[in-house]
Image (cartoon, rainbow, N blue to C red; front, side, top):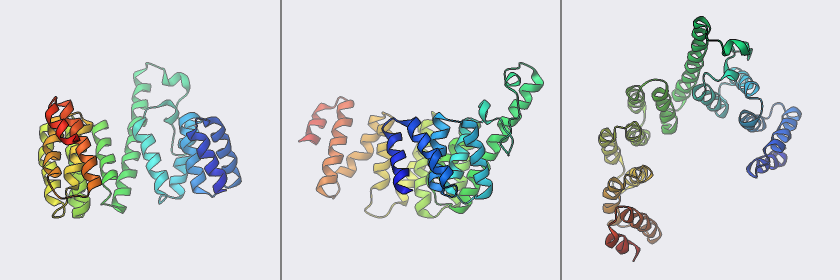
Length: 272
């Protein structure tokens, strides 16, 4: 079974997605209790197959096995990323709530019903993420996922509030990662000046002698093409003790940043 599943995943990665889908469908029929196979099938099914059927199956799987984390995360993602998609306008058992012609109807009453189902999907998705957070309050990626959902379906302030509440419940290690996430959320939301406080909080919480937070934040600014901000964080770190391989890697990154700032003399220095 594991070999066949691996074969299907290799087919998917090589671009033979329909063949991978058919292989996984056959495997799932032969091994109905295998969660790994079912999860792999539903991921591809969602992408290129029966999206409505995939959502229905994930709903049933969540109802029967709420502790199956991969399925819970995938279900929440579907409901939150495309809550109003026609294929997802279904009840808890997967039954369509609208006829195709109703979805296209300009009728205010129909549009109101459509909006309500969309809001219901969002509510369920958010409840799933909240439940997962209760199980692991230190999961920074999960806290960020929930905060981004609040931003997507509400405001930046909603996302910030969610993340600050998560930080208050996390251990110092989890909180440090979430502070970095909050800074990133603010910057991505068009408020880079509001990233300063959370980024400084994260740096203050790292272990003595560690520069993990600075490196993470510098990499974030690099990805945002904020070269000056990235340089200000990375430059002091390069003056500290570290292994040769890490120093070479960081020096190359710094040279690229300086080049983007047109400080070619500094870039040459870091490359030498």
